[in-house]
Length: 352
Ligand SMILES: CSC[C@@H](O)[C@@H](O)C(=O)COP(=O)(O)O
Image (cartoon, helix red, strand yellow):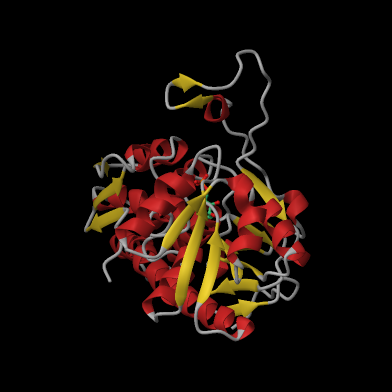
């Protein structure tokens, strides 16, 4: 089944679907360099932890296609400078940081290898950056299948109702999606009875993006407002809640879109397994717990306005964190990665 393509890349040419224009218009914009990518990420023309990392990597590949270097050291310095800049675009998602570390590591290995000249090193770095796109799709397909199987097994049913939050589909990744990938896999095998997606206030990734993907792919789906989650869990007899992640700490605490934590609390009350689905590269083993995850504060206008129309009382103060942290103990279903499903308190760096 064809899924939406948010990132189009071909030999040094990169285009992204401008997500600010969805669902009204499907318009692709060119990303010609790292500066363009930084701005597109900052302005949320592309968003979602995996997609941010991939667009960052590919924008560097676009630049590198047009360049040549005198030495491998010059290449290393260039790659490092560009990644140092890209990681400043948004703070919470870890994927771009880990992608930056991997890209710089490779450039450094090339620089330390005296048998490699600048042209060969450049080709290796470009190849590595370009591979991020296909690798992410492959990881998502595996996440989808692992998650779907685990939910069906845990629930002991062959038709399940799922609740999800924010956008974790083709628009937030290279394709297929993480949590939405699991839902897609359930649908593909005829095991999805229904999916409920939250609106995801205040930026509405659920109603604008996830709902758009669900309609596009003709899945049986219903949109609910965030404050309908507990009523919905009870009324619809939800079988599992599944969400994505922007960063998972070593102890399993998970930062994801604001509102995730309250869904986990509600799921626990209703005895519904709560899953996080994310590539293994969303796990930040450098931080012990969710307390160390930086949480992005978003502009107040996202809360006070609908489009350009002010809907909140003028003068009111606002608090608008983009993400919250769900404690590991509430992630009762597990953390679904391309390597399998892990208990949230049993994450190990070298898990296979
Ligand atoms: C697949 S990324 C994890 C998502 O659940 C979500 O938090 C997300 O899409 C990131 O938020 P956003 O602020 O839209 O970039």
